[in-house]
Amino acid sequence: MLYLVIAKDGRDEGAPARRQAVRERHLEGARTLAEADVLHVGGAILDDAGTMIGSAMVIEAADEAALRALLEADVYAREGVWQKYEVYPFRRAI
Image 1: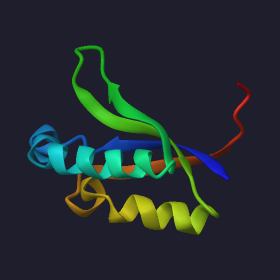
Image 2 (image 1 turned 90 degrees about the vertical axis):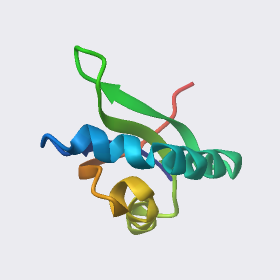
Image 3 (image 1 turned 120 degrees about the vertical axis):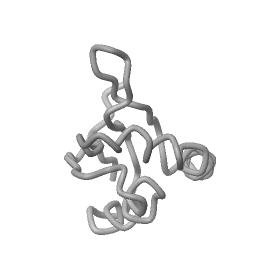
């Protein structure tokens, strides 16, 4: 099943630095998931100033528990970048 995930970064002063500190490791993991056809699309959510404040992804997983396990394994989750998730079942139209 496909899921749309909105992962919000922390809003504290140190949030941008936490993201930048592990960004390359996060992108390496994302590339691996994309090559395995698990991550269908992913990218940063930006504020009006162009600062990254979260992530949006379409991920394929067996169920929501498997999806959440994938999210929690990501370095952004482990290092406290992502603070909150919104998860929605997703059906591709095109």
